[in-house]
Every structure is written in structure tokens, then in C-alpha cells.
Image: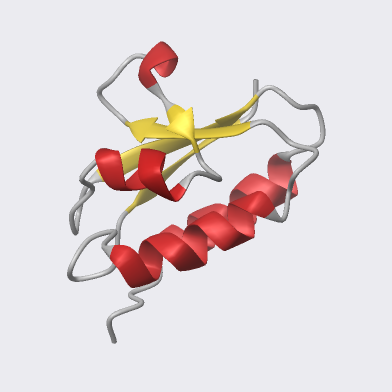
Length: 92
């Protein structure tokens, strides 16, 4: 299962604007099953990365570490793209 770790860079965490940017990008990969969860939590607790409600429920703040996972073969480039989005300060 491909996975990537990212650190939330937006100074206000994943509030409405950065969350929307991320979710739109994740939803564009509709043929891939991508989840997001806190690094310290079990993979089974991860949420659908293309759901803004799921993402907001994680309450991610600046500096939090998350893991993106996919059960789909060939999802590495998509995960890399999504990690770059999370590691960009959208509040700047």
C-alpha cells in the first residue's frame, strides 16, 4: 500500500481555504482510493481525503504530521502531489 507522510504547513492549519484546495485536488483522482489520517493513529482510522467534512473533522493544525495512503496501484504520483499541497503554506 503506497503511503506518504506530510507536515501541515499552513499557519492556520487545515481550515476552510487550504482544506478546500486539498480536497479538490484529492477528488480529481476519483479512480484512486486515498485516505488521510494523523501519523500516530491506526490506518483504519484514516478518513476519505476527498471529503471536506472528513478532513475538517481531523482538526489538523500547523505542524501536525499526517499520512496519506492509497490501496490503488500506481497512486504514487497522486500522493506526491497531495503531499506538496499539504506542505505549502496556503496562508502566505
